[in-house]
Length: 364
Image 1 (cartoon, rainbow, N blue to C red):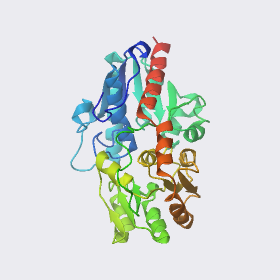
Image 2 (image 1 turned 90 degrees about the vertical axis):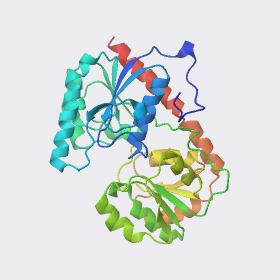
Image 3 (image 1 turned 45 degrees about the vertical axis):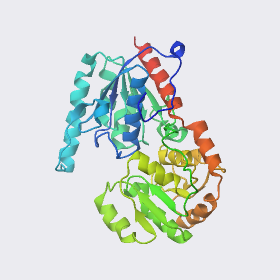
Image 4 (image 1 turned 135 degrees about the horizontal axis):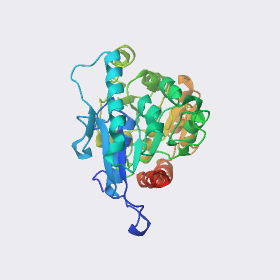
């Protein structure tokens, strides 16, 4: 078992599925390493190590410069100088095309597609090797085109009922496996929390950190931000001018430091400006005993209960300010218990293991 999951338990040998040869296709915009660029990179890291720990032979196809423990087969190189948008688009296209053209020759039992690119989606129906695709986002232009007019091939799952509904017209048969987290790594603090709020995630417009800052100002509460500056223009224009004595940017934190910061916050703010397909930050916050105040976008309302937080209409910073004050008084033990019931890493891993086995067996 990987060191990041020290107290997790695998199924008993008698109930364990047969070992599989699994090829995991990753999103290749960023390397898979800490501090993670986002939830998809963290998911890929954890699922690869977890499946290997259960005895499966897992090959990860990802960007080079990923974590050494993952033993990545690189399909695209990390570049010190950023490419133009067109060059980056073509580089990703050719990277995925090259992989898909050779993947049938690798002797895999099943392909576990976790990328967001149209090439694996388009080519799935041409492969001999069966493929399970996880729909990590709502539908967007390239994947809509790839799956339109009955072209969807392979098996599909997604991370929430809300996201399954968004895909229903294109993918009517879609399993739902909620994301899971390491409940030992994301844990409550041994000391009482502070009086501040925490917002964490990628600092990009669709995550809405600027709205969290505005809500905290209206609530009269200090706010800490943790996350990578994935969009320099957004950070310089919408975040940096607001930093000051009551608005602190903690930087891009590795998982252990982020969990500590989260457990020390009075409330976590979740402010998506898009239809969030799951909301991993909600699960991580509650595992740390930290209640949530957030916008009702995508799956967020499905994750937050009356005992664990408050959800308000999207983009309403006044309502969010009131929600912050209310959520700050929620029972932190109830938050932790809710996370334990719903988002354990081992439960997620078992569900994926079974589904991957079904996909492989159906084409044996």
